[in-house]
Image (tube, rainbow, N blue to C red; front, side, top):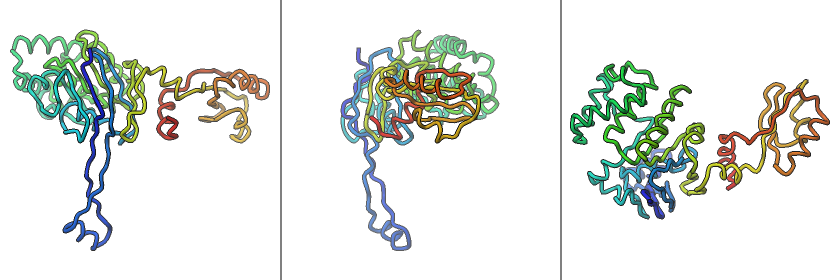
Length: 326
C-alpha cells in the first residue's frame, strides 16, 4: 500500500536582489527586484507503508524543503503530494495525528521543566486519554531507556538524553509516519546507536513508515535498504542502497601498508589515490583492473599488509555530488 505519493513536487522562492552601495540600498528600498530560487524541482516518488527510506543530499540540495512540504509546513509551488490520502498543507487534524516531524536542530521540550511536563502538554494537545498516555509513556520510555531522566529538567540532560526525550515527545501520539531530519546530529557514537536501535524497534513494532535524512551514513546503512538522492533540487536516484554503490562506485578500495613511505608521484601509477596516512595508502581501482593492479603492487612494492573492500559509502556519496557523476 502506497502511503506517500509525490508527483512533480516543486518549490521556488522569490529572493530579493540588492546591489552594493547607497544606490543599491535605495533601489532595494524603493524598486526592489527579485530572482527565483528553485529549491525543489519536479520531484516524484512513492513510499509504501512500513518502509524506512533514506533521503540523501548535500547541504542546500532541497531535503528539508521537501520534508516541510510533505508535513504541510510550507505550500508547494507546483505538483502534488498525498500522505495517507491527505493533502499535507491543509493541516487536517486527522492528518496531523498520523505524522510527526523530528528535526535534530530544533527542540520542542521546555528547557527549564522536566521532560515529563512537556509530554503531558503534548498529550493534552493530542487529546490522549490519561490511561493511554501512561501506557505509551511507559512503553516508549522503556524502549529508549529513559525512565529515570523524565523527571529531570531538560537543561540537565545530556545531548543524547535530550534527543531521546525529543523522540518520545514526537511519538507520544503514536504516529504511523515519521519524518526525521538529522535526528542524530551532534550525538556521540553510543547515543547515535541507541537512537538507531529505537527507530528500528519502533518501525517493527508499529509498522511505521520513516523518511530519514542524515549526514551520518551509518544511520542510513543501519536502517535503510532504499534511498532517495537529491541534488540541486532534482531527484537523481531512487533505489536500493547496494545498487547505489554498484552504480556510482564501479571501483574497489585497495588499502596497503608500506614498509617504507613513498611519494604520491611514485604511487599514482598504481591507481587513483584516495588517501595517504603515513605508510598506509588507499587506492580506488576499477573492478576490471583489480587483479592486475594488485599483482603490480605486490610485485613492485615492499608491502607489509593489504586489503580490498568496497569504498565507504560516505566517499561514494561525496564523489557523486562533487564530481556530478550521475
